[in-house]
Image (cartoon, rainbow, N blue to C red; front, top):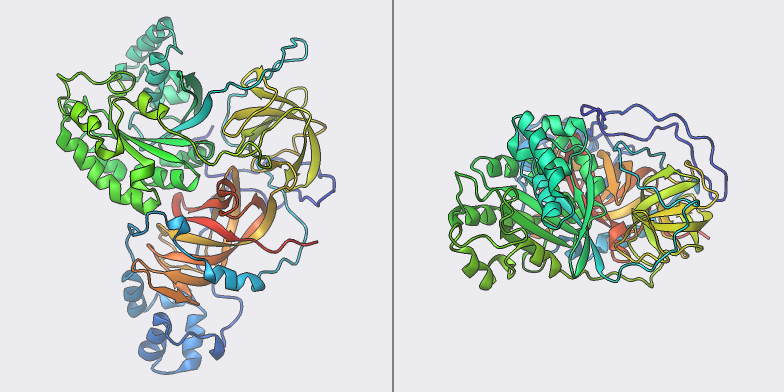
Length: 602
């Protein structure tokens, strides 16, 4: 994989789908293209006097101070937001609302009543029934486990009764994610001692003795040479209570799209923080990946966030409680602003990923005298002594095996037929069942279901599985499609949503109609444009209906138009299909939830 490549964009020439039709041959994969520069263009329709909100602070500023009461000139300026940035008064008005905000509500996703969205539904119209399928080719090489072949018949079995959890390890580069993941596999006897000795010798040859555990997860030469995870590493382990899949996400900002792909499958996020002096600060400061990864984890549907303060054995830290408390005190307000309910969804724990202290066995009291009293008292929402015992205590809610099947497609490949990979979000997948592939609306039959190489009679919510789709080509099954049973999910190119502005690119200092970004929802990615803003809510809770712009820290109800249709649902109906992220210029600028979809057509 080219580490310098930009995020992949679907080509405008990609084949389109018509419900019930036949797919055209897929064009060659386009070269990676840079993300669009989100400059706020002028609205295509000039404003009339009747559309002006006289109480809008921007309108009052332009009319009274810049245009000296000349309404015609003021209307022309309002219709061209880009030209307003030339005036210092407008800059000052925008700056008055800037700065990342720690929202007062515990859960911003349900903080608004969506009245603006409800009022706007009458204005939503879709003129074209044609649905464009995402011509997506994954940029990440994923290890593809082959299902049992027909020459080796293996009797299908019922799934393991133990609950399955997907763990994604996220955090800033060099926080110790791969080392922690590798040590968990070693401590649970999933890696033999001879293999560890081989990795130790290889790491010593590279003068990187502490990297040997990371080599368990970082398998390719590029990752081992640079000490940076590029692809999402995958492994499994189990305990007496649960089965786990580890998703080791890359920490470097160049590989955030790969991290999103891993986090979209996760149930529990393990945010790895380095306690080493200077490393925590560089990861948490603006531009560090600690902030963006935590934000994306919440947006992508992680139910719990376990914050592990790693490298506590480091000479500059030496298990000092003061350093542990300092890291937590800075993380709490930010995680609350991301939408996490701190008391219910966030756990904190000090560990050493290299030595294994507090991973499977509790740290020795001679090294850390305060930890035993801390966890027994339930400090920082944690009443378990080790990471493994804490993970075993987590209970997943909202998994409904009797609901309609929803399985977003993560990837696909060919092995005597088309094999689709994904996580079952709801319902139960069984061999022989009939499914609908959205957004193409094509009907298929499931020929087989596998977990790794084990054939299954059924797969419940939370399972990462392989399914063989009968009579489907590689073009019929794409990353970002959703495998459904009746009634299938919606597939739209327009939606009304509630977004929280987290950051804005240098070229666009305000969020307004015409703002362009990449729309990430479950496994899908599409180019998106904000077409209309209905209302904004500032940090103080003041609602401004009919606002023309928003800035960092505001919550916005707006309409977004996608370049092609994407399978999705409202957040209230299916949360895992109703969350999304807007990213541009390599940064996350907004997180949102879908509030309304266009009315269904007969």
